[in-house]
Length: 230
Image 1: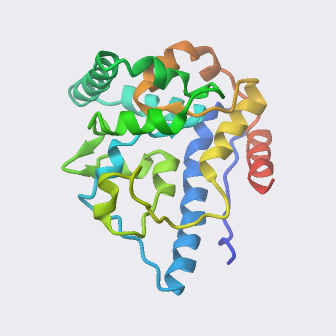
Image 2 (image 1 turned 60 degrees about the horizontal axis):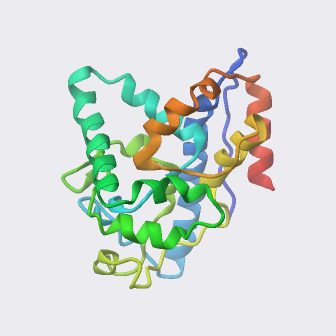
């Protein structure tokens, strides 16, 4: 298939990594939409839907630009809306600490770490995403790209234990979630590792200086498209 033509407005002033996230979200949606369409032509349909939030208990990994983008969205919320979200992040971190899981989650960037074992143990903590409301995503428009990529085609009941059951998903010819991580690595000289979602505020505090960096908009977008094409 072919992605539809898209016009992109490029800011004249220098921009930070978070500014390019909505563009990548839009491009990711188009890539995923194309993959879903190709699958449907083979008679394969997505089984995910509203109020189907089992996967929202998985250890979601997101890129550095998405950390900046999502934290910025939260900090812009009115205090009454922001407070319960921050409380949920705190509760999840305390639960991880009580189970001895917080250090293991922080070590996911280590090549020696067993990502599958950590992901499994986190899933069975039973902690839902801070943005899950009535088993539906409350930030669907700006949810992480890796969440957009996860489109199950197998029976929803199998998602109750994604480590014991074989979950079938829509295959993607590109993984948009990795593009932003590679862009941040290229421009900032940081590892292209993805950040565990429950720890985004910790990572944000440790890397605030990166948020203040900026680059010419044209150069930033050209680099992103080059990474995607490669």
